[in-house]
Image (cartoon, helix red, strand yellow):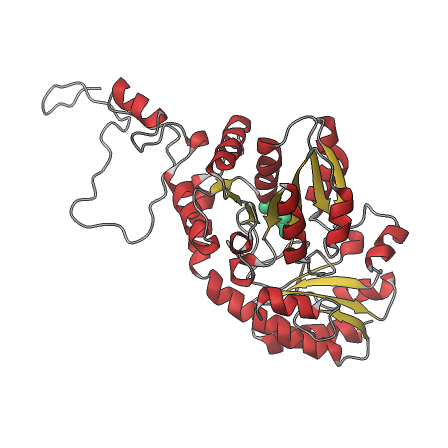
Amino acid sequence: MTDRRNDRPQTLVRRHPLKEGVSRAVVTPIQPSVVYASPSIDMLHAQYEGRAQGYTYAREGHPNATLLGQKIDMLEGASGGLITGSGMAAVTAAIMGILGAGDHIIGADQLYGRSLRLMHQDLARFGIATTVVDVGNPAALKAALRPETKMILLEVVSNPTLRVADMAGIIAVAKEAGVLVAVDNTFTTPIGYRPFDHGADIVIHSVTKLLAGHSDVTLGYVAARDPADTKKIYDFAVTTGLTPSPYECWLAERGLYTFPLRFDRAEANAARLADWFAGQPKIAKVLYPGRADHPDHDRAKALLKGRYGNMLSIMIDGDAAAANRMVEAMPEMAFAPTLGDVGTTLSHPPSSSHRGLTAEGRAALGITDGFFRISVGIEDVDLLIADFEAGLAAI
Ligand SMILES: *Cc1c(COP(=O)(O)O)cnc(C)c1O
C-alpha cells in the first residue's frame, strides 16, 4: 500500500503504536499482544538473562498477568507470584513443577474435588506417590511421612464441612521433616490467613473465586517462598501452557479492587445468616467457623482472628426430596457449585462435588442428602433470609 501524500510504502499493520502523550490512562490498559519486539539481539540476550526487563511471548508472561500477580503478592506478603489460567493450573504447576517420579506427596483428605482427584488418580501415572490425611491431626501427618515425602498440600478451611486445619501443628511436623507446605488459600483469602506469615512455602489461589469475585473469569495464582521453587513452577507452567489471558487478568484486577469491601460484607452476611439458621426448626445443623457450636471454633478463632469468611453450610431436617423442594422454592438464588461470587450461590455437595463418593463415604464426612453449602454474597441480608424462609417452608 502506498501513502499518496508522500509516495512512501505504507502498511495497515500496526508498526507505530499509539503514544499516550503527557497524560496517562487511569485504568490499566489491556495488553493483548502475544509477541513483543526487542530492539536488538544484544537486548534479547539481556532479557533472557534477566539483565533487562522485557516481554517476549505471552505464554512466558504479559503485563496484565504481571500486574495482577504483583497485587496478589501484596495481599499475601509474597513476591514473584505467577498467574495461571485457572486455580487447578496453579495447583498442578506447584506439584508437577517441583515433584518428580519417585517423590511422595501428602494431601488433606478434604481437598477441593479436582485436587483430590490429582491425589487419587493422576499423580500416580507420573510416578508420584500420594497419601491423604486428616489435617486436623498432625500425628496423622507424622505417621504418613516417608523419606521421599516432598510436599503437603492442604486448605485451611475444608470444603464443604468447613473443618479448620491445625495449621501450627501441621507446619511444625512438616518443617521438622523438611517437607514443603503448600496452602490452597482460596477459602480463607489473605484477609483470613496469610500462609507465608506462618511458615508455609507455597501459596495457591483459585482467583476465580473470591479474589476476582464476579464468576466471569477462571484464573489461578501460585507463589513460592524460595525463588528456586518459583523458577521450577514458572518453567513448568510456561512449558505446559498454563497461561492466563490478558483480558481475564484485567477483569480480575478490576474485581480485586473491591475484594476487601466484598469480603467484609459477605462475611457479615454469613455470620448473620448462620445465627438465623440456628434458630430455624427445620435446620438440623449449622456449620460456620465463627459460631461457638462449630467443632473447630477455638482453632478458627486463634487462626483466623475473627475473619471467618463467607462460607457456611447447613443440614436440613429432610431427605433428598425435601432438599430438592427447597431448591425449587428459591428460584432467585443461583443453585450453582461455585463460590466467592458477589451473589449468593447455593450448592448441594451430595449431587455435585461429592457425587462420586458412595453414600457411606459421604456419611463418613458428615454429608447427608440434606447438606447444603452456601457461598454468601453481598446482597441485603434480609433478602437472603426471605429467600431461605421460602426454601425452608417447602421442606
Ligand atoms: C475452585 C477451587 C479450585 C480450582 O480453581 P479453578 O479456578 O476452578 O480451577 C481449587 N481450590 C479450591 C479451594 C477451590 O475452591
